[in-house]
Length: 247
Image 1 (cartoon, rainbow, N blue to C red):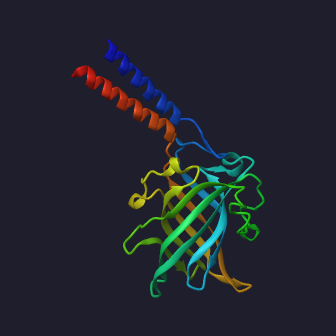
Image 2: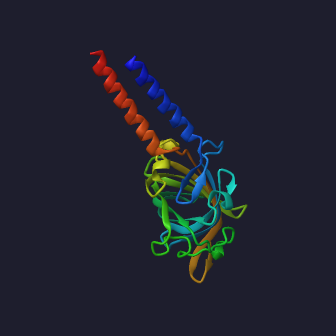
Image 3: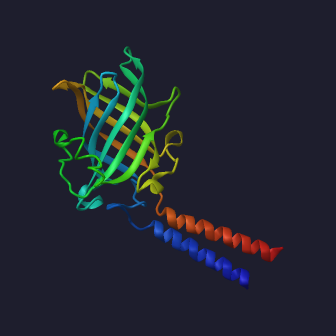
């Protein structure tokens, strides 16, 4: 009878765990549904990308949609911005108009004082898309994940006919307030987030080589890491108690 009660208690925990996963998640003001058909998918607004003399990439932008919802739904009263850098060219294939990159990082921030037009790259700056002196929450901290040999984290190419360039890459979670919700190792090559981008071909303005564009990113989110951890501990406790009773 005692064992039956423990089994029933464990079943209650399981039901509670699954019901939790059906609720919306709010991390730092960013809200999304882990059960959405698109979970987890995002679309950026404008991105301003800077190309250094050595070919390395950096830049900044804003997120325009998450799981099909606009910023007024997924970040009411705030904006989700990001910065990136450290993507360094490792292989340049002129004949194939292709470049492989190594390294790289991306940081997402929650800004509770929106001041950038998400669809106008020229309204973006290194200041209004970053931490703003620590006032903005570091929501997700990511680093480049190797997707093919030779430490490649980003494959980029150009469409000269269409006057555009694009790339595909992968990222791993290393920190941020939402880290526990996205450290899944469930995407390409065990990464956490994958992305694809499209940019205008580089232009020069005031001595700075830049391009503008947009990107999509995809991943899987964990509903409530804390609840899942409690559930796991409860199962271990139940297993230990049942084992003691049996022997």
